[in-house]
Image (cartoon, rainbow, N blue to C red; front, side, top):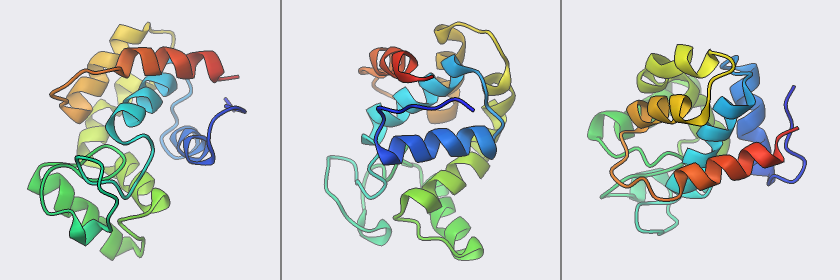
Length: 150
């Protein structure tokens, strides 16, 4: 099991769940996913686009949560998933569970499970998973996580 001793508890939780629940074992793939979450939300599950900290049902515009679910289908999917499975859509646990089970993530899962690829390979999959508009610091965050993983 790959660990990140210097990561925050939220980062460590997501890292563990990606390995246990999504069977992602390549450190570069894990670093890319973590780096993208860092860019999207800084691992704050209850953040609404623009930085306001609110519960799920109070984010009325823009993206919400760990990966800034923006489209109505993805945002409401989080709420429906958590209602169906008894989780809190504002929580790290609920959102991580949804993220790993969401169709868009599942569509890229085989790419993330592919071993021994370089960072651009996984970053391409992250783009299709998230559909980001702003690349921002995703690459530098990913390399930073890669340095921390053991």
